[in-house]
Length: 376
Length: 84
Image 1 (cartoon, each protein chain N blue to C red):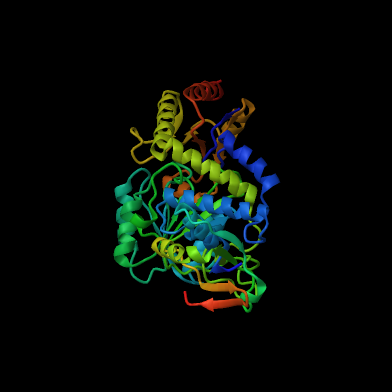
Image 2: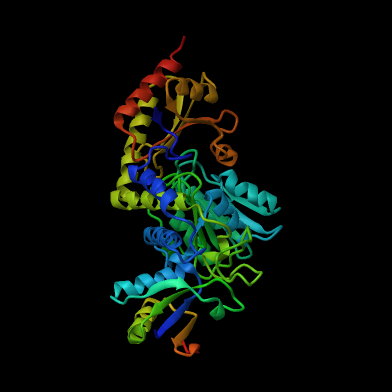
């Protein structure tokens, strides 16, 4: 299989991830639930994972690194910690449903700071206009999951700091791919999956909490701490980690993060961008295709979308699947992003690369697209 | 045997205390806090230190910003809380 759906889940993982998960199944119980060896080893593994993430994202203390089920879980905690029922939020025009649906459920008054695709200056201008004191939170995807558009996060963060509005960063498509510095951004939260650019297994996510940011748990329950108290502990990570941890997942995530740090975030990004650029160049040579890619991929990562003027996006995705090429077609759970880019009606076919893809795979993809879209 | 118990707020903090001490060459064993010391709270972790290691240990922890919430001295007559 040629796997080009890493924006959903990175399917190919470092071998160490699977090994760690198998080891964890036999060696780890639950952190904070006992004084015996398997519990202590679990606590040690959890702390090691927190510490790796702390260093990767420049977080002051490892306690500020909270394990979640996925990025959606992390975003829900972040949003519901800051935006009250009927509150006010500003979001970008490239948000995923993981952001828009929680805000809808809160009945929030949402302003969309929209700029054209691959025009960071327009996005920045829109945020400058929309972010004012009184806004409860700004929520912004660092990178669009549909188009790989890297939004001008540093500038957006600066606007938030100036206006005193907390910033929630959806780092689903950038964690492990672009540099992210919690302290430099001054963000309230960074939310991310463990199973995409961090190469952990599905069922892992991370919420990084800014210093002294109020946090409200989505779940209440056992934490292995302050058991006699009937309120959730007021300290992190326990406040946000009720119930038994996914230790095989965390052990796998630890190895995934180690892989990312060893290979280097910028090296991974450069390799993925090169493959995306090669793909875009090849697709542009084919007739009747519209390719959503920047010429130099300055504001784009290794994610790109395209559509055919003569073929439905889902049909094209299905035809590629028949040739054992895994892509994602449709709306990608991000109708807002498609609306912003003018592709809401047709959807797109999305190709997303990981550190494990090769140029040969790109050439085989291009051959397949050419064969499928060839005029009959 | 005489020792001190440094009570941590959470298992994460207890782990950090143990690691911080270990990096400084101070052996501190992590354990569940005895029930009699966690009365009213329930379920905490602690790090055990030899009396001779207490002063250096606390300095190291303080330098790393990893502080216990309580300290107990364990002697022949049982536990006694000491000032943090």
